[in-house]
Length: 340
Image 1 (tube, helix red, strand yellow):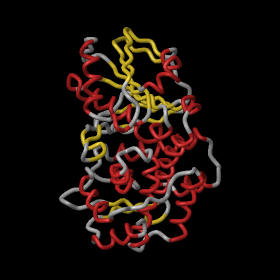
Image 2 (spheres, one colour):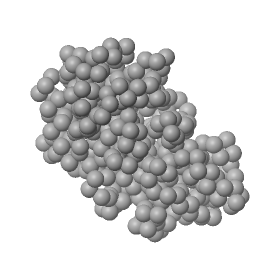
Image 3 (cartoon, helix red, strand yellow):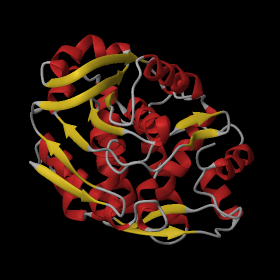
Image 4 (cartoon, one colour):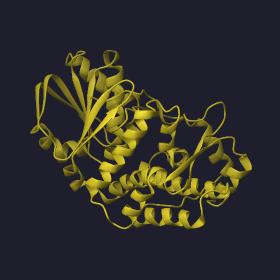
């Protein structure tokens, strides 16, 4: 099955199913990490034909999503005399995908890259839409570009070796899409009516629909940050070591739901439905805030904050979103107090 994505800057296909033969008549560098390489590099290279193939291995983990890793990869590309006709392949989860896209966007002012995600979260979210980036001490993905891949290949073969926590983290992003845009999709997930490939396809269709309308996050694309405004603070406060990204997003969704309830939108019943579905996939839904003022101030480090106004994405109800700004600080603190 295939999903087409058409942005103002590029159209490309998202292939869902068994990895096809990929032929590239130029230099290719696979950028990956030791874990993915150890498990799956042979599977990829058996499906790949290139004029010249290089493998660049970066350390595994969110804490390595930084300029040091990017510079290491750039040095390898220069050493191997890569040029503007060369191609990079992002082969890993969201960290590898975001970094590879960023490297591709800045190497010689931009070369081609392909996304081959190996985690569920990357398949349904980060590999689609062209967001690239790295972290710094101020927060997550604050340095990066919008830069679209040539293609995305989603093969569930890679999920056979995925740890349960990583799989659950991906489910958080699938549930996020359903809560924001598609009540019927949410109900089907809740009632176990869909295969994994069907869930991936619907999530990707929804993501493509959003990105096609708003490539650079000026409007509707910001809705994909449901759960992320709170989640990024949680990740930052725990130095990216306690929670996987999807786990932090799951907690962030619960916090956003509480804000929605505080503002008089989401019903208690629907908030409970969302929380129960997250818990069904063993996702965390609670976080102990040590200092609510510190937590609140971290919102202003988020790249989505404009003119000192925090933008929150909340569900009005399942399948319908609302973007809210200029919320009184006391209302936000009231929500944070529930997590102290």
